[in-house]
Image (cartoon, rainbow, N blue to C red; front, side, top):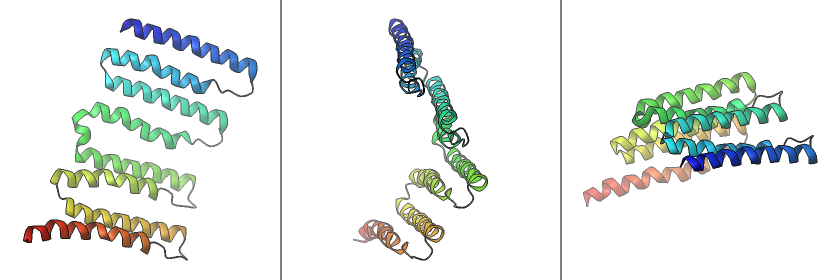
Length: 210
């Protein structure tokens, strides 16, 4: 395994130098070599931590490499707008959940994670682009984490269908109001969603009465 890591490291360095030279000779104004170098860098890093059997350190270093790549991309192509903050946040949660271990599946972590995510993106929405409340989209997605975990632990699947349908309905109503208040279109997806708890109710409770 040590030979594999050494071979991967040597091959990675050799390939990165090759791509840098080709980039400089053929198109020095466009830094395209960073893309293959990014993926090549993950090769020896992954092998090294697989050899050490340390998934936690693998998640940490791969996250750092990925965030560094996003920062580089941001500063090269659009330095006036630091968009990497939006993409870096979910990446950070990978090593966090890995280091939490079994606790990562707890309801407390899900609630803290969802609230932190909502506050994080809502802050960027409020200070960066307050004209449109786009934070409702990541907020809607992340609320499913504690909601699904809560009902899965209690096996309350029928109640989950009701609460989830309510969440979806509120989401579509909110999007309808903020995006196109002159056209009432939210009733169409809401009508389709209503069939979920209705079918769950008749399947579970009416089945018991037979």
